[in-house]
Length: 410
Image (tube, rainbow, N blue to C red; front, side):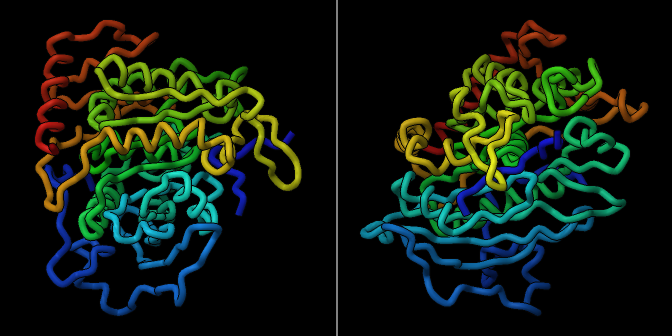
């Protein structure tokens, strides 16, 4: 039987710390360019669609397209769409960042319109593509970079490293776009590998986002075994990588005001227990996370090449596009948007995300992520992990930090 591809969704169509405030666009520079890119962008103007396209009751227009380029990662092209229904265009919009899966396919306009219709809001969609091959032969799953040795047996998601330069550029681009369109809220949404990207960005730059939706996602490392996964991750190494990842980044993820973790228990491509551990860690830190479990009979509901897959990883349409998605996801998502205070027109100071986890200088398949020596360890309780207990004082400090962040935004 053909091994299923991680992240393939069936659709109907350098390491400096990030800034502590949302970046503003350079004076005179369009917001789809980062400040450091504006000077070199004059050689080619971004293409714009001639006419808006209508799908059902929604209209969608391609506003801008451009490219992120870094010294250590390959080019990442992106598009900015505006979608609205009758009577909505005068309202302040929301901005939704959409991250695709490992099929590397660009989402269609009709699918974006269906999402806009479910959101029932004037919406801008920022749609980047996964970065191309980078320096030293690095490949990427969004902000996770890995070389050929780290990706042996397709295990780059276990033995790779979070790539700060790309995470910084993408989060800065999102923040600039949100400021430019005066978005009331910013969403991060993704399917499979895109869900992995949502977890990455939420852990790196939680101040940029108001709501996160990770569908069929996963983290760095896994609890899966050869018997429970389409992959064959070495254990206990892969499990320890996941435990360290959660311990280091969960305290930042909870700073996203609302977090929806969407997954099928029978998924053998993205392991359910992995995201369940991340969800439980966020809840233990008083994060407003929700775990939405896909019904078993819907886990293989997408069709691919005229047939249904049997890996439990095919629920893109059910969760994001189909009629059932209204009751399953979107009514909750709309409620979250009303509960999170809207953003003001000006940038607000926000807490800095944690530094990336350092790798121990040992062999590839025994290299486990370790907390930075120059910063205090984050004692996030991980059910079933090596540190079952939680430092209550640290938890209280995180609660106070989160409360201050909320008060500042209000």
